[in-house]
Length: 600
Image 1 (cartoon, rainbow, N blue to C red):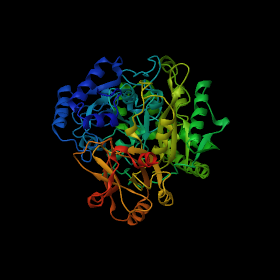
Image 2: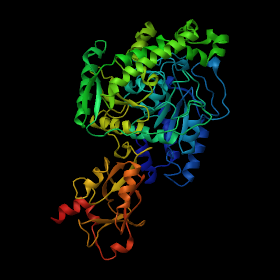
Image 3: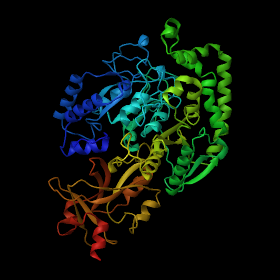
Image 4: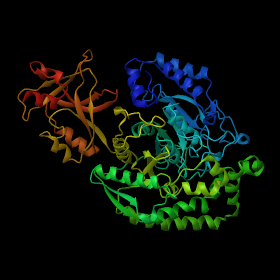
């Protein structure tokens, strides 16, 4: 059965097990789209015949997890990102043009085997956090169509939350990749500025824009980010990755002091924020009250300062000729930029630099912060009546993130009494993306909030987020280095971090190696073997620690690529075949720890 909602881990597992094909998944995606009640989600879709042709081509090709990590995964794209063959409108028909090539990020996703379904609705020119500023309609919250879905990446968030696609791209300048995630109970990944190329993206604020990712799980979002990320020498705002680690236990996380908490009278949101703090503390963290003032003041500069002039710069030629064709609220916001001078722009930069120093003083006390994603959620009718003031409220906890050069991951955090979703966001300094994602994934899994509209759905075990990107390497262990085993301190003393328990694919056999102290097992791959899989753990080490660890491994053991049950490959312990010729096989026990328990 094709999973509902779509997620990468279960789609991949189904492909490997030959339960369905990319053609089946594409057909199911179109069935779901036709049945979905909200026509405002989409602006344009790839012709069904073209989608099915791509799906058939993938179906005919061999599944190669390394060459095609997104094999057969359906996705959608916010319609301010170029996709060849579809118009780019930025939700303004008079602005529309036909791109001759895909945006850089789209090229990478398609090359990885993903299947593009179509272009999604947005607040016009990505100006807004409400999702109502579009002539193509206002995509509604998946839980109650009287309420906004959040913007500006409204259609992308709803397409994922409704299970129409597995992931979607948005953009995030002021919170557009996070607020819609919170309102629709999905994950919103806002990378460090410049890690995903913005070439082929209609700019909002070019110096701040980020391509963002919506997904059902943090692990899915992290994997998509790894595929999409690259240094683009043709894009002046592209940056080379230099990922940093964060502690996965004993961490300090900043929380809002009582004076800085504003939920506009919604007691449920206040309680759910407290509950999220408690869950994160239960995962080994210490909450630290911070002074949020420098962050909030910096965020206010985005719309109440000269950065709004950058929005004007992005479309100055268009607005000079077609101002009357714009959404009235968007026109009011962007046209106001004409009142700013070059001197104002420099003074804004000076003000931001001072606030960044004040923020640094707060970072000295914390590894990352945990914030409500949004302080309120409004009905469409309320936003229509007061479009600017209510929109401004929604950015209270999001607007500062790009101005102060941080990364962020938004995750679901419960439901209010009225059935609407609540979300929180983890925010960390630039280039902590994947380490932050690992913690965000643990926090997401510590709750029980489902995936998007599917409130009862369990998060797939195969989609855990890891911190092995950049300066971390994952290592699979199967014997004496497991947690609680005699050699586990060797890992911990090197600063290794436990990521998750796992199981190998069925093609592995396990043996007791003779004459080893302490006793050790030997793992051997036999392609034709159909066993239970072997239990183990994945740990994360720095490259230097990984090298020192591997250098000490005695023969006949070594490190090679081990296939896990979800089809992914990870470096791990393997054994030379000659060493197990006369060894006792313990494969039936399913793992070293279980063998030791049964032996007693």
